[in-house]
Length: 96
Image 1: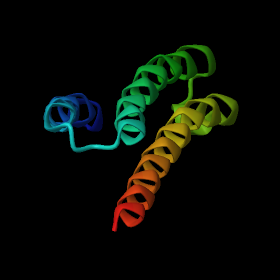
Image 2: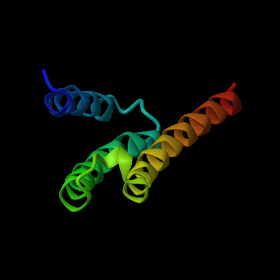
Image 3: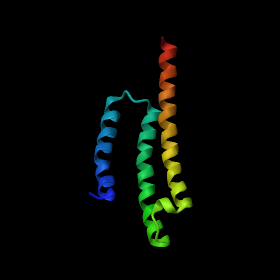
Image 4: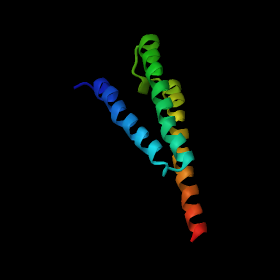
C-alpha cells in the first residue's frame, strides 16, 4: 500500500474520532477546535504537495517555504489542543 493511499484512508478513522469527541461534549472546546484544525492542515498540505510536485518537481518536504507554511497549520492546531486541555485542568483544580 502506498503512503498516499494510507494517508487518504487515515482520514476516515480521524473523522470518526472527531464525530465521537464532538458528541461526547466532554472535550474542551478549544481542544476540539485544535483537532478540527488538523483537518485544515490536511486541506492545506494536499494542494501544497501538488504545487511542489508540479512547479518544482519535488516532494513537499523538499520545498522549505511551502512545507513550513503548511506545517504552521499543524503547529497552530497543536497549540489549541494543549491550551484547551490546560484550561480544562485549571478549571478542574479551581473546582476542587
